[in-house]
Length: 106
Image 1 (cartoon, helix red, strand yellow):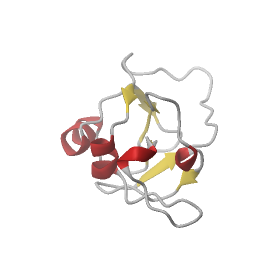
Image 2: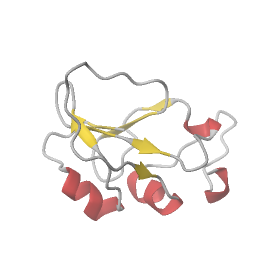
Image 3: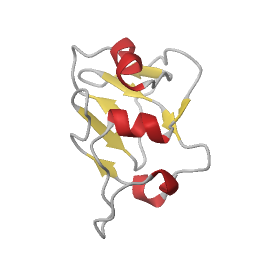
Image 4: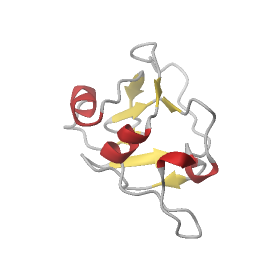
């Protein structure tokens, strides 16, 4: 996920959503946070969603993401997204058929 707000911290993300994961500085501003799904990424999340964040400006990057060589990750633990974290962090994800995200999609 890409946090585009330079004034929003990873501590605020944890307080707002419970998401605590390794991260690195974004290419121009904010942070890139590593997220995973315990049972693999559901099809609904295999695309990018722009400006989908609830607590701040966040893009969900579900397609392939590459980082510049030489950037340093902060932390070693990655977050396995849980349904409650998704609901606190993101506006509703919509499938192409306009079927909203549910806990059973994970």
